[in-house]
Length: 307
Image 1 (cartoon, rainbow, N blue to C red):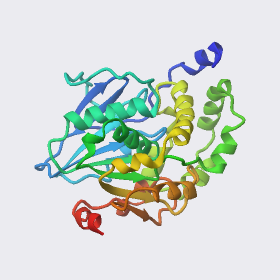
Image 2: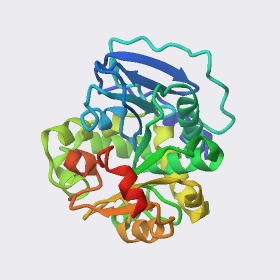
Image 3: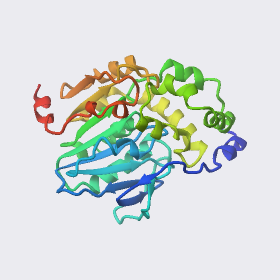
Image 4: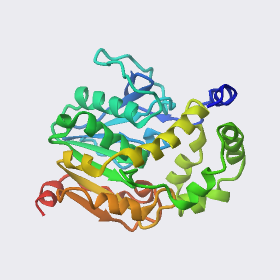
């Protein structure tokens, strides 16, 4: 990448979205992990891994139960979307050797969180879109951590998957130097201009979370690196990674204009029979935001695994 392009791309992006948060936030490398306070005794732990240009608020309304210990990742070089909490440096943090902004780097943040934070043995790791790839990479790096962990992969970036043709067509002519200009253009356009195409039918929560997408990262370079890394990761990662997963669920939307739904399904079908594939009626890539009804219940899992 040309030095002049890198200079343009590393100009900071101001944080444009945050929510009140009650809990603790730990800095881990160039990312963070937030642990929400819960009012009841924790019965299960959910670790949420957000997708490309999203933030951890994606999961907060899907897991509101007072008995759920909710642990939320902020991927590397993303803004931490919380108000009123000062991030602390945990004594369990270890340096990460991979390049920040990559799936491998964020997989290491996830593995540190999983190793140190859950207070229950009933653990679910839920990743949306790029977050699905982060989970699979984390399993590939430390399979022993996932022996008893349930995995939920929602509209996930998968091995041998592809971006939707519409997205590929848009990205092809974009050189590195055009990114800051393109993002300014997108941010100045009303989201209705492109929202319906990519995001499907809107609701208040989707509108709230998806209107600030291009302010999620701390710089433009992270956006470019994320996209290039997603495409490379899908190409180079083998579906053999599924063999390390004990049990869980793929949630597939009925319509997806971000990722190629057919390629996603074909990849998911390479997984062991202990993984359920649920083809939801969700009208967009953002299944959980379309309806919380698609999020699997905790009590259903053991029987589902025996099918």
